[in-house]
Length: 132
Image (tube, rainbow, N blue to C red; front, side, top):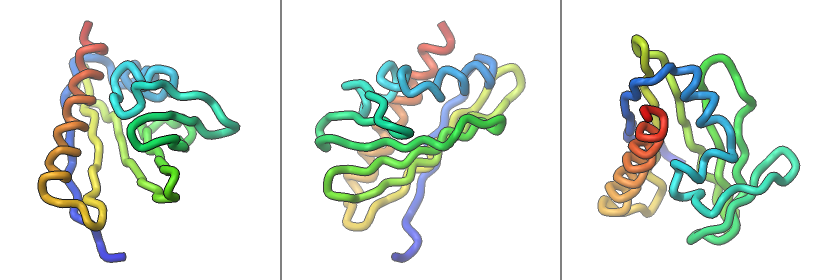
C-alpha cells in the first residue's frame, strides 16, 4: 500500500492538558464528544465494542501514558482496520488536540472532506465540554 494522503485536524482548548487527556482517555467518556461512538462503548477484554452506522466495531486503545497519546485502532466487521492517531499536547495553560486523518484507498475528495469536518465537530465538542 502506498502512503495515504493525510490531514491534521486540531483544536486549541483552554484547559489543562493533563485533565483533557485524562477525560478523553476514558472510553466511557468518548460518546460525550466522539459522535462516531455515540452509541457507547462496552468493554470486551482489553478492547471496546461499539455499534453504529458501520455495524459492530472493535476499538483498541494504546495504554494510558504520560505523553498525551490517545491512539486507537478501529476494526469494522469487514475486517478493515483504521489506525487513528490522536494527541493532546501542552500549549501554555491549555492544550492542542490533534487528530491525524488518513485518506483511505478509494475515498473521494468529498468523503475525505466530510471525514475531516466530522473530526473537527468532535474536537469542538470536546473543547466545549472541557472549557465549561
